Length: 336
Ligand code: AOF
Ligand code: ZN
Picture (tube, rainbow, N blue to C red):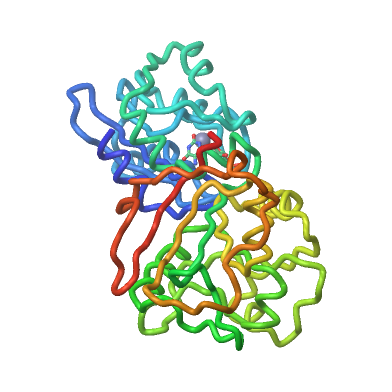
């Protein structure tokens, strides 16, 4: 299962989960490995079976170890359960059930065909591998990470509007690393009109990274024809709404399972007030402004008893990290 998990990591994140599969001989020797390369391409199981065929390996009587329950549906490809049965594989060991209704049920199909099936091996690691995807599929909306780069006194811009750069180069590089992993980045039309950001994922030397998130702008105002978000590769969408639920639903339909909301204050506050944020990443610079744009507006809370509570998230580098001159705070919603 470790090898299947490692293989899964080679795939891209997106509408589909990361999945890896390994085929073992009856003696436990590793014969072939496969992984899923993203929506529209072969699933990990089919990829591993294909790899075995390419090497002229007979798969009958073998064991498949896979990080997700083999699918039972004909989506863009599949069904994997059928491909496994046809390949004569005798035993399937998978980590976690597929929570996606149309695809679920592969384990039963396999058992009915006489394949021995076991599940639950490396369950925690497999859930962790796709934790945003599992969350998004269960809630039928993208997993939401909120990103704020702020001063000690929670300002995201000075009184004259200047906001570049509150955070250190190390924090910026960290943010661009996150942009490579998420499916979409979302800002409000106000941010586009004031800051004209590119919203691309870039390396520290300013080169465009290979994988770019969808750039989404929400709000009723138009996005100017010459706005920087429209440039580059055309992976841009304007969501003409102020309703965060509607914006998330549109993004989910576009295949987005993990979105990072980057500002400004009104959109950050809207998502927080609506309790639609799963994860908070705050870059805290050791500077004070005393005036300027606050990171957040009114969240509709008037008494301490109604305060939102967040928990420190130790995953992925820890709850508090030092990045150059800044602190990176990582928090998780206590809703779930
Ligand atoms: C598997 N193996 O490697 C993956 C699975 O319509 P499709 O073909 O893109 O299928 C997408 C669904 O299939 C996805 O939502 C998830 O439930 C499952 N993904 N299943 O057996 C794989 N990637
Ligand atoms: Zn499949």
